[in-house]
Amino acid sequence: MRKLSATLAANYKLIGAIMLLGIAMPCLDAGAQTIRVQADSKQALPFDPDKALGSSMDILPAKDFEKVYSEAILKESLSAGWGPISYRLNTELTMSAWHWNPSGTWSDPTHKSGYFVGSTEQKEPIRQSFAYSLPHRGSTHGDASANEFSRITDGDSATYWKSNPYLAEKFTGEGDALLPQWIVLDFGAPVDLDAIQIEWGNPYARKYLIQYWNGLLDAITSPTSGIWTLFTNGDVRDGKGGKTFLKLSEAPVRTRFVRVLMTASSNTCDTHGSEDVRNCVGYAVNEIAMGNRTSDGKFIDLVKHARGQNQTAVQVSSNDSWHTEAQALPNRVQTGFDLFFTSGITNKLPAMIAISVVYANPEDAAAQVAYIEKRGYPISYVEMGEEPDGQFMVPEDYAALYLQFATALHRVDPKLKLGGPIFTGSNEDIKSWPDSQGRTSWMGRFVDYLKVRGRLSDLTFVSYEHYPFSPCDINWSDLYREPELVRHIGEIWREDGVPAMFP
Image 1 (cartoon, rainbow, N blue to C red):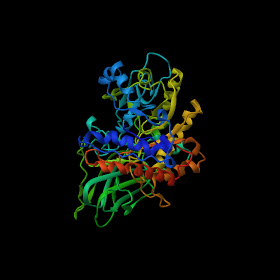
Image 2: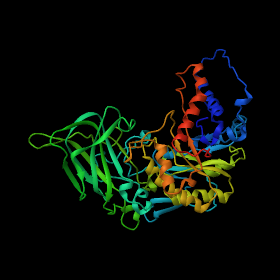
Image 3: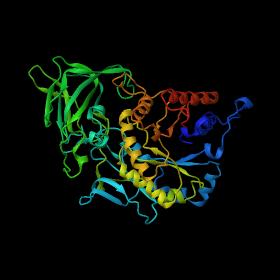
Image 4: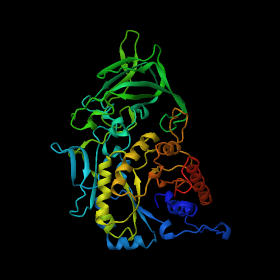
């Protein structure tokens, strides 16, 4: 079983141990083993295996459809005895837009581009769903196999990164400064820096900070191991856009990571025009150069500009999901919902389905649920997005998107049980850079965001993945630690504020 869902509630001890056995057994020594079972009625946990034990459909390419969904394979699969099944959303992990239905409407139908909404019409059954690359992508890593890369350091001023428009005041109803967007440059090793050149697109930042990472560990993967420190001349309060050069300090600062933190937008429209407000909110950057100046004033750019993974690495807070019909990824085809629900793999039980949040729009998510319900397919839970922590989103950004999507989904069906955030898997609390109050708990801040806005009722369960051990580097005795590990991470989510009644 790939994922342990927190919907297993109090039964997670037992299920965690079973799941781990499934992961670890292929690498364990084939010799005889001794299993000791301790039975104590005082410690017994009642559970229904038909509800507690499940499986998932994930990353199944189209070339394998006929085999995996064949009668013989389905019979063998169902003989394993699982109950409910989950539909996993692999496209979001690869930083792609998702067309759950190949038929639908574009926000710019003339050019077949913009923001796509799948059709709810009941036409031919949907056997395949499709992924599309993001032309305004900002992060370097995430899908190297598709030759994806950041547009911020690709050496092409005609391409640009743009932040997610749904995180702007126009859609959140709150000031841009409450959800600052950011770009982090990773030079790979400490370098001396005292100057930056930002070639802004539209919309550009009117207010922003240029900061360096003061810490020994990775600013992205170890967010509490250091602090972001402002360059002496790094506070810009009247940005004009265009190509902006800043002398950040008199003496070079030695650091590996630099962050551009944006708090106020110009709200000027990007290259796609003014007809769609989503083109005119957030932030856009064409290219960044950064380095130092020599004694004679010459600028030495230390950023490597290249189309591909060998560019200076960039991580961004969010990405715009604008794309075109031409950007379909032929190697990113997944199971369609009609095939999923009619194949027999759901065991005639309600299924947990996923909707795209990070690279999508609320209207498309609502259309997806409407389509499934029109077909009469039963839904147990709706997972909102996929692994935002693994994509290094701060919790407030994910929470702001979560609520917009929850509103759209509940207009379709007020009874839907929504949840997430489907963490990537951890044995400890997941951390984020400290907020203005010094809080670092990702889950704690996510829950608080919903509470403060009176929207905690839109969260009905918490789901997460669980990978306690490297499967080929463990001993049999390590398995006995698994119940405690699962109990521990469950307690952490409760301490972070997940209510006791939430599964």
